Length: 168
Image (cartoon, rainbow, N blue to C red; front, side, top):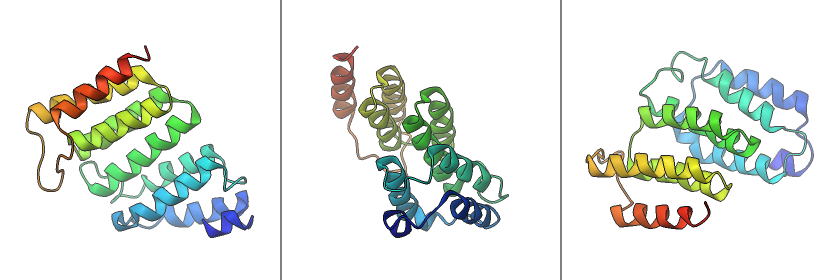
């Protein structure tokens, strides 16, 4: 992120780094670093890194046998990052596919609501309702473990849905 802000991360350097990352297993402990970088690209702090290039990096990283294994936290996080980028690229359909795949690896109403909020904040209200409904289903079915912990109540989800419906 620092290189972005200094204008030192050019497209060719990013492509080189992306290639290096794709041959190493993704370490889920670096979630915050990737999130910060994603936000910097979305905010325009990395003008030479396009959202398409960022999406391609995550696609490459998922080709690694460990990160590409469904059901792992690495797979869930990388698919979430793809969906995050897709929302900001203006491709909510592709984002929904990535998010559903992420949820298949890491279910939980809180996780689904985070995705719903991301859709809503980008004015993809139908997708926001879809993911809030998934959150409600997961909440009601008790699909929550200590790892997946629910930080969202049924009332929170219903309130979110009422507010989103006001925009439709």
